[in-house]
Amino acid sequence: MSKQNANQKIVTEQLKAIEALRGKKIAVTQVVSAIRSLPVHKVNLKALGLNGINKKKEHLLSPQIEGMLRKVIHMIKISEVS
Image 1: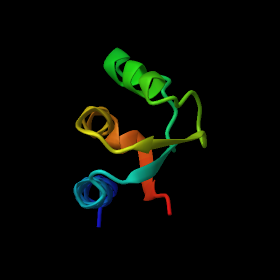
Image 2: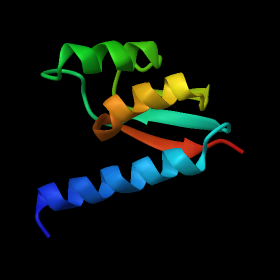
Image 3: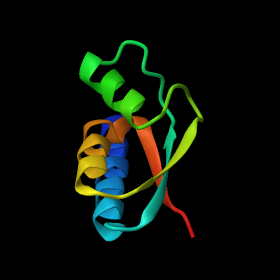
Image 4: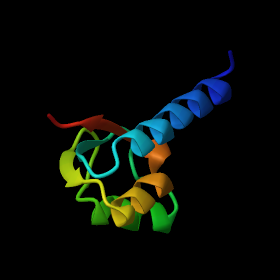
């Protein structure tokens, strides 16, 4: 499996996780640097409260947060907070 196919598989899994967690509290962790990323991605990371690799922030998954997550899905990891 090529690296691109592996990344697409991870993104698909993350999107399915977002749909399953609607209305719940989630933890978002930045796993990729914002250096050399699009300005829109940088703004979304800042709005999510992520300002560096391995920074974690908790959010209630609302439609607004979901939209921001979809923009930077390739740069973050999402997990449910119990």
